[in-house]
Length: 68
Image (tube, rainbow, N blue to C red):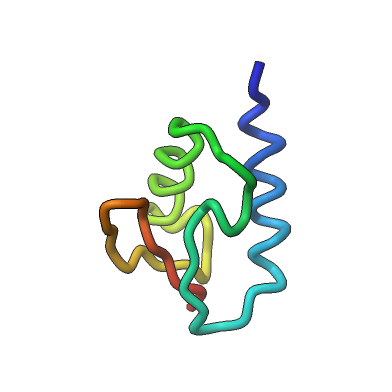
């Protein structure tokens, strides 16, 4: 069973050390994240719950974010 709360905490912890202006994917923060975690992360970024991160866009691989 996947513990999404723990995985989100791991992602947010790693966000703290990423430099401003850096683009990244969720896979840069969490190894092999489940698809549901990607939806949760995206929703929290777009709603502003996760601050200092903006949604840049997406490609055929995954969503792309930037540290603001």
